[in-house]
Length: 318
Image (cartoon, rainbow, N blue to C red; front, top):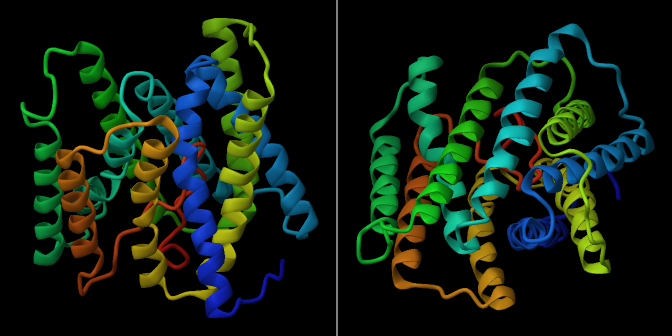
């Protein structure tokens, strides 16, 4: 695939493919954690992603040795995003349906604005504040007593883990916003995935030992899809898409990911799409749209799904 900007039609088609892959990733993660422990499922996909990214960067002649100034962002993404976010999502999916999980995961931009105001002293204009309020109202709708069983301890734990994952992702985005970049973001993704794969594998070995996995073709396929297509190739494609489409289009277009994820989970897993889920998703995504359309510089919108890759800085990210 050419690294030069694509035609608008081709870029939109490629964008639709990427959004579909990321939406499917949530259902695949649900499948994986039913057959492999969450820690090992994330660790194995991280290893696959690192190998695929190494091949891509070498093929594109983008392979570099990171400089000292690159190390903080490598550690931040590897620990907060590829590590904690992915692990917390995997554990949360053990107890929470995919549809609810992906909506909770996509609350990330709601937490970015207040964190950026607190840590980076970025102003919060009225439009963005209104978006946050609308998004929080959507979360309240999701957890109202008529739509959520508060006596279900596993559901409470799973939802809490997913919200904590969103906070970890938001913390990483805020750091990325303030980072002074030396190398191109894509040149560092391999190193982020490599560090994450090492940390996750060591943690999984220490906590659980060598896994006893009943390998099947479906299981291998899900792992390969998540690591190669859902992470490495999708990130490569987004680099090209970001160069071919306006930032506003990619920013708003990525909001189709949770919609796609909910639809796929209903189609593949037979999950019910409840009215409360539709209402909360509409309010949360609507709040993100309101914040994104602010007259001021838009927040970085999450651009990946588990195993996620770096949220890129605002000069490249939607």
